[in-house]
Length: 267
Image (tube, rainbow, N blue to C red; front, side, top):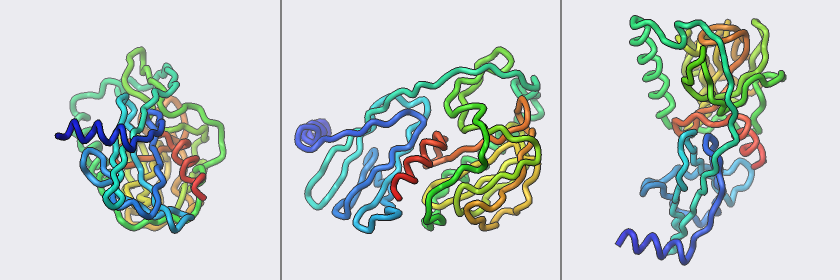
């Protein structure tokens, strides 16, 4: 029965979008939409920042995801299949030399690394229903980009990960600014990320600022867009001073520049 229903939806109502792995699809739906289901689970339908007769929904696509994603839009008795075709991004590879302890950590550092990861993932899994922003997003500083999102990263000759954010050139002590209004939900020194600040912008959207040398705001501080988050540094796993900037949406790291471009296009 499920297979038959799926086929009927495809024949009668299907329409599609293309989205690159490691990015977020920002879907606009009209006010007649009652539900948008992903794996039979409703996605949050959020207020459109400018059009009161529309709503938006986020679908974050993990970096290593390659298969199409099917959603079902329900409007009254009408059902539409919305297929997101996942295109593989043209990501590069980069070779980096870092402290060996940040490639193969000593055993006594492993509990700390695991605890920091679990703490962060618990934050990203938290959906705050209040949207804190009401204007376009900005970059955290104006500087050259030294490493793009999605680059495969070879540390000391070993392929270890992919780059989950965008790096900006920033000498130690460069002011770093909030990309938009948000609430500080983490500020601490971490093993890999060094001095870290995470802002909750509401509705499952978080911005991250890593390798900082100064983090003056305690958890719970409300920051306005353009207010100073901290100062850049060279803490954690780095080859030199810079700012790592990123977004987490629905618990998934996504290309921050792509996200800013898509959100700002709604205004």
